[in-house]
Length: 431
Image (cartoon, rainbow, N blue to C red; front, side):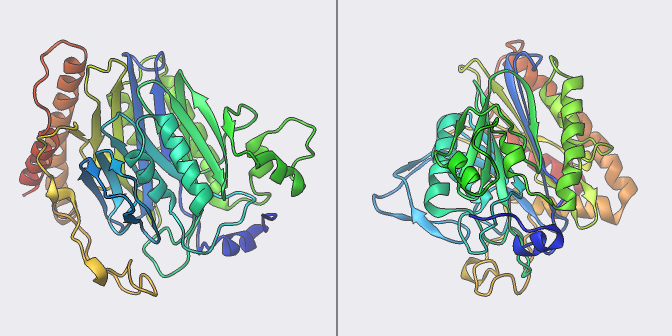
C-alpha cells in the first residue's frame, strides 16, 4: 500500500507518459427508460490510431486443468464459458466492452487512486471485462468474478500498444436485465454500488461516496492504516481514495461526467437505444472524443428487455467516431454467421504485443470494415459523408424495426445474421 505521489511524479510513478482522455459508460433502468428495457451504452476512447475489432466467441467447454492465455499472463480456465460479443483493441486478449448470451454487459474506465499502479504485468482491466462476461450469468456474478480474479492476480501492465509504459486502475459498469453495479477499484481493493432504477453514468474518476453496497473486507482497515481515514467519521470512498493531486485529465473528466449526467437527466424517463446513441455521438459535451492523440475508437449500445422471452439486442460501430459511424445490431443465435470483416488480422507469436520487449514495432491491424470506412471518409470526404447519410437512414430504420419487434408490434424472426448483413451492406456502400 502507500500514499499517492504528487503532480508529475504521480504520473511518472503510475507508469504514464501522458494520461488518457476520458471514456464514458451509461445505463438507464426503468423508470429512466421509455420502455421496460435496460439500456446500456459506452464509448471507448483510446489512442487515435488503435484499431478496435468486434469479435464473437461461442460458448465452449474446456478440459479440467487447462490454462487460459490472457493479454500478459496465464490463469486457470474454467470448464464452461458463455458466448460473448466483444468490442476490443485488436492487439489485446481483453475487451473495452461487450456482452454475453446471458444478457450481461460490462464496460470499464481508467482511474488513478492513492494506491500505486503495479508496474508489473498482471490482468488488464480489459481482461477482467472479458473474464467477467465469459464466466457470469448476472451482473452480480460478474462482479464477484472480477473481484476474485483481482484479489488473486492483481491488475497491471501496459494498456496501450506503445513501448512507453502506460498503466492504470479500473472502474466497471456491470449491467443485466434487472440491475446494474458500479465497481471501483484501487489495486486489489474495491467498492461497489448497486443501481436498481433510473439513470447512471461513470467516467475516469471515482464516483462512489458513502452509498456502498459491497466492498473488499480490508478496504477500511487499509484506509485507516494509511492515515487516509480516521476510522470514526463517515467513510466516503471517492474522498478517501482519490489522489491528492490527480492527473489533469482526470480532473477534466469531472466535466465530462457532469455533462454525461446532464444528458441522461434530460432524457430521464424516455431513454431508448436511439437516445443512448445520440448521447454517445455528442461532441459538445466531449462524450464523443476527438482531441489530440485520442478519439472514440469504438462504441456500443445494448437493449436488455426485462421480459426474458425477448432477445437482447447489442449495437456496435466497429469503426472510430460514432458521429461518423453506423451502429449495427447483433443478436446471439446458434446459427449466426461469423463476421470476419470486423475481425483484425492475427499475427501469432510474431505479434509485437507478444514479444519481449513488447511493442517494438507496429503491424497493420485494420479489418475490412475499418479500411473501407477510413477510405470512404478520408479519400473523398464529401462522397463519404453522402454515403454516411444514406447509412444513417438505414440505421434509423433498423432501430425502429427492432424497437417495434421488442414491443410486440411486428413479429420477430431469426435475427442471427443481422450484424453480418449490416456490416456487408456498409462495406458495399463504401465501395
